[in-house]
Image (cartoon, rainbow, N blue to C red):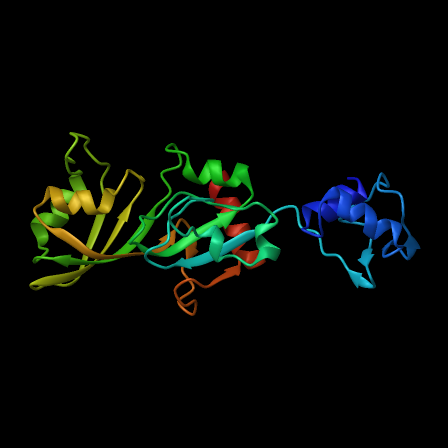
Length: 239
């Protein structure tokens, strides 16, 4: 990779601005001054410094966000704030995107990455990646609903869902439940409960495949995945 492309990709300026940094003698590779923007660099082997500070290069970035309500799962939008808007600029420069989507008013686990191959496989209908949600339901959820979800319910457009695992945590005028589904139809959890005459009033995703929401993350906060979590995701999507 050319040195000017590397620095530009990492957000140190446009190609033109990076050339000025090189011209001023601020960039070194393996302790050697670099002024030629066409100089090739191997980011995983060469040590590149800018003004004495080492440049850290990553091809891919993997982030876990506790998505807050009111923010949409998109890279950009003319009206609403997006999950990418919540990222620090040092992370935005990698051009990451959300893997799948959470509804605007839904909270919880959202994977954000620029690894398109991983995202494609995790979202593939053939993979049947389980996603688990905690929800508060208006109305008393009962065993009939559990059985109905096990069989699959018919949505408002006639689509019959794949089986879902419904666990009742607390039943009453409002019920606390957990539900695991392997699809990602539009507003699916909400529509599944509408199909049995009930309404979701709070929804939070707590897991996706092997990835569990870090409960220490406040709404709107995020962190990089640990190496072990990345390996679990990669081995999972290949299985």
